[in-house]
Image 1 (cartoon, rainbow, N blue to C red):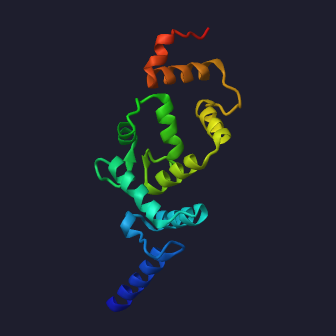
Image 2: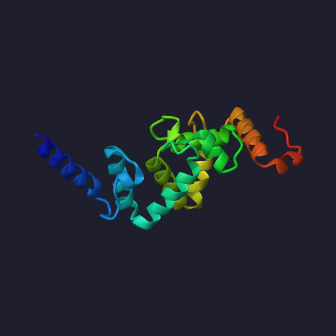
Image 3: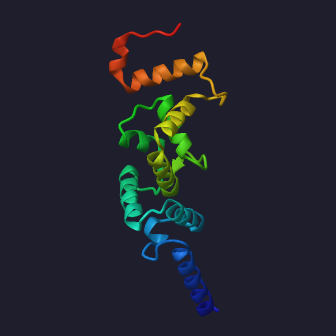
Length: 167
């Protein structure tokens, strides 16, 4: 009956909304489906994030999402952070894009930001290295070093004036 389905829907929605997350937050507040909501709840619990921080990150996420589509494209990402569309920038974005959709949803965004912000200097160095070690060999070959130097010179034009060359 209609009443039964309405009650079932309401109960299911309530269970999903509060499952593992701070009761003051809801999936609808962040425009998340059930799977995304579960992932956000897991991030909140694992990282011991306060709901106020999650809401702050969501506000930032919404400012990046210029077209208000509910996801952040690589163009929106680059424009917001004033980054040139280099291989480096595209690689950073692709690492954040866990489902390889070409868009960042809020869960991918907050998970990536939290991971990045919790790295110590050694982990940051490994992260930066891995961005350019395309073949995952553990060694930067000449082509990977060229890509690195081109990316850096585009991102930081002052380096171009050093007139560095790679043989």
